[in-house]
Amino acid sequence: MISLADIQAARQRIRDRIYLTPAPLSATLSRATGNALYLKLENLHDTGSFKERGALNRILTMTAEERACGVITASAGNHGQAVAYHATRHGIHARICMPQFTPIVKVTAVANYGGEVILHGTNYDEAVAKAKQMAADEHLTYLPAFNDPAVIAGQGTIGLELLEQIPNLDAVVVPVGGGGLIGGIACAIKETRPSVRMIGVQAAAVPSMQAAMREHAPVLVPAASTIADGIAVRRVGELTLPLFEKYVDELLTVEDEEIAMAILWLLEKEKTVAEGAGAAAMAAMLRHKTTLVDKNVAVILSGGNIDVMMISHIIERGMVKDGCLVRLRVELPDHPGGLEKLAGLIAALRANIVQATHDRTYFGVALGNTMIDLTIETRGPEQVEEILGRLTEEGYSYDRVR
Image (cartoon, rainbow, N blue to C red; front, side, top):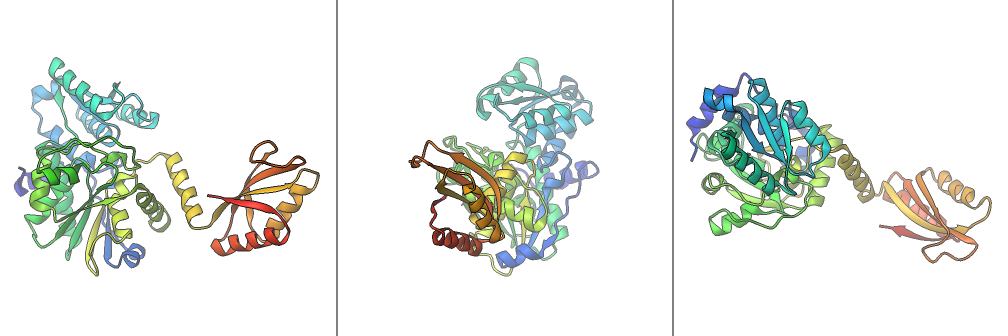
């Protein structure tokens, strides 16, 4: 098990090469959560996540012989980018095994940081097996994503920074995947100030730490799809579980919809981008899943590497939930002026049609009529009800698509 001294040594080792991320107070999110809420912006690192800390600390502990042979790891994104970035900067050849179906944007990012990408397997576990086999065959140094003392100690430097940045810190809420991040932070904080409450948050779809806590041993949980792919770890580490059991006070889970809401809140209120894993801790706070009230709380935004298309989907879904975007399926006579009349009615109510699609064949539409799907941008639920009321008054037959 790592110690506070290991984390302090890691900080001295990496401090001149790692960005000291800020931890500003958010007035808006404080009001929403009932606590003084500070955001530790780990999404501001060069590669967009906290992974740089552990990767760099491990690289700096390598021998000259290990450096000459090169390093290898497996990753679906952030860890691979961190290893490629810092290994290349230190003149070390880095190979990154990634699943074959890894999004091209992540593959390109690793390559741009100087890593040699090796696509193998259909999932992360198969990529790990390939990386370990290559490490053994070619005498490479394998760099684990979380189950490594130097990696854990590197991540723990966040805890030391928090104690300096937030003098009256009461609690820290941390995303949980394999357990390296929270294990390191919790050790640093609890060994320095035991009264600080440590709370872990993991994706409900892949609750590997929850399963491990029940069995007091790492357990392999089924694979599942989640927006928080960065913490979708099926089995926690043998080194991280004891740290979690010793130092962490509470473990929570969040659903994908809750994470998506947190991503949207961070975009709208804080103008900061968080990936699914990075927003998990914030999701727990926004949904009031903790018992914290009127406390000084640090929330770790662990990363910001999210696909722009995913952001687009989240924004649109958020607008639908808020009643600012509505889709209506309206049947109207298929003759000149029919669509113009309907569009005029909506325009008169100061709503904006952003998409329209005709269909004369499906949905049971009567001969001589057409069905049109309208996506309408509104000011909110009250305006939606006003539109529906006017359509009814004018004799239109319609359904609201949900």
